[in-house]
Amino acid sequence: MNKFFLFLGVIIVAIGVVAFLWQVDVGQPRRRFTIVTTFYPLTTLTQPIVGDAATIVQLLPAGQGPHDYHPRPSDIATLKSADLLIENGAGLEAQWLDALLKSTNRSDLPVLNLALALKAADLPLLALSEPDGSGLHTDPHLWLAPRNAVAIVGSIADQLIRLDPNKATTYQSNAAAFQAKLQALDTESQRRVGEFGTKQFIAFHDAFTYFARDYGLQQVATIELAPGEAPSPSQLDEIHRLVTAKELKALFTEPQFSSATVDQLARDLGIPLLILDPLETDEGAGGYVAAMQRNLDSLEQALK
Picture 1 (cartoon, one colour):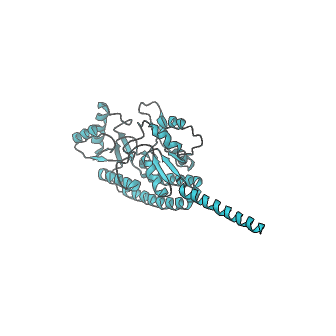
Picture 2: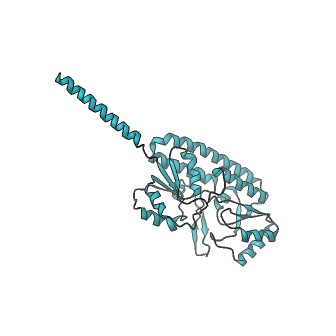
Picture 3: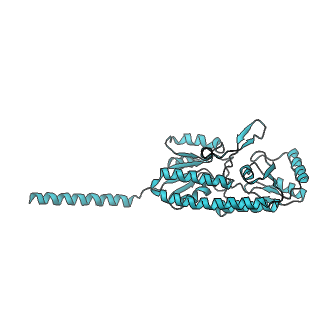
């Protein structure tokens, strides 16, 4: 009889422990895997991989580009709660992100540097001249070429699968579907650019060199030598000369920058002013593929 009551007591205790653990699990669900991206292009390339499987938090607010960002105190808390940080690299965020990361005191935070990931995938990075002619720097606009985007998506998916293996199947299938869309965009870009009558264009700033490299375009000048730096009168004269000499049919501006100067220049030249969006801010709609197709439309209008 004593053994019976002892056995019954063990059963009751076991049931109580299971019930307690079930209540704890239900009452406090596990926190979702949290990915922090630095700015919009990285978000728009990460979201299709993640879907609803994780949370994405973007450091830079809507409409803010990475060149002149000033971190907020809330950014420290955001990074402290992150499971993965995705940065562009190639120096684009260095002037503010390095100090911000030090402020978090989180040496354990996994960081995916996309420029280093592309190098590891044997995709060559391009060099640009410094505005003052003092040397060269790596072109950080990695995302503005569909072929680069395919590799970027693969790198992000690999990192997510490693860090959040319970969702590996979701990440893998979503990434494959997105890469198929990017490869179709690459094919479309190659076909459409191949039909252009001229391959030369003047960009608003040095953003489209990877796109130009992949599809045989030639960027002959830029309106802004550095982000936010208005062109000098002599630079405007040189652009005027190039447009006339090369019989260019349009100039380009960008949605996140004031176009007053270039608008006046286009009026003086009697040519249209079109949008070529570097996707540095979320000014458009429809995600990466739709934005790049709009850029193709603008280039086609100017160069066909």
